[in-house]
Amino acid sequence: MTLRDQRDDQADVYQPAEDSQLLAEAACDRLGNAEERLVLEVGTGSGYVAGRIADETAARVVASDLNPHAVRQARAEGVETVRADLVSPFADEAFDAVAFNPPYLPTDPENEWDDWMERALSGGEDGRAVIDPFLARVGRVLAPDGVVYLLVSSLTGVDEVVERAGDEGFSAVAVADDSFPFETLTVLELVR
Ligand SMILES: C[S@@+](CC[C@H](N)C(=O)[O-])C[C@H]1O[C@@H](n2cnc3c(N)ncnc32)[C@H](O)[C@@H]1O
Image (cartoon, rainbow, N blue to C red; front, side):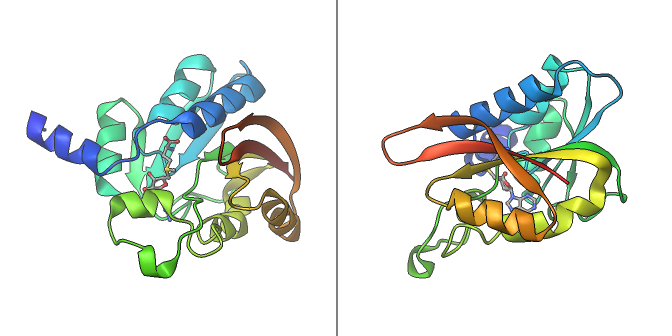
């Protein structure tokens, strides 16, 4: 890949921010150093969260992203990444843990713009357009005692996400949060 390709990729890829850090820290804290865990990061973007989990825990980490630029950037960072919609290509019960910092900003359909950064940020009108299908599908790829770390924002509606997770058979507990002037970010730990 040329330097120009790398710059083009970065412009189209969500770069690590406060939400990425909060998710990485919570997942690393909770996973600790238990061996032989296989972890999936969905929507890896730059590969930052997956890379931190691989570096700071004993887990083996793989990742997915819909955005081909993100797949290239994460691979360049050493993260084993596949281009995929959510968890679609992965085997049943394959993962001990799944982490996701989803697109979560509620977006007026009239203001949506159709590019990769919008896909990284926009959660549709209610902020949950990607979270809801994720919650419906993630259980299939989780080991029976597997766990999900899902970042949510007060802008998305934490209670609504917890309720939807409950409909999919998960109980949720908040394991980390951080407040900013316009939103509070929370990491939910979901188990069945
Ligand atoms: C808020 S960004 C988070 C990026 C990175 N994980 C981080 O925390 O810095 C959301 C990511 O999800 C990806 N994404 C959006 N919809 C997706 C889908 N249906 N399947 C897989 N990835 C998706 C976007 O391309 C983007 O990289």
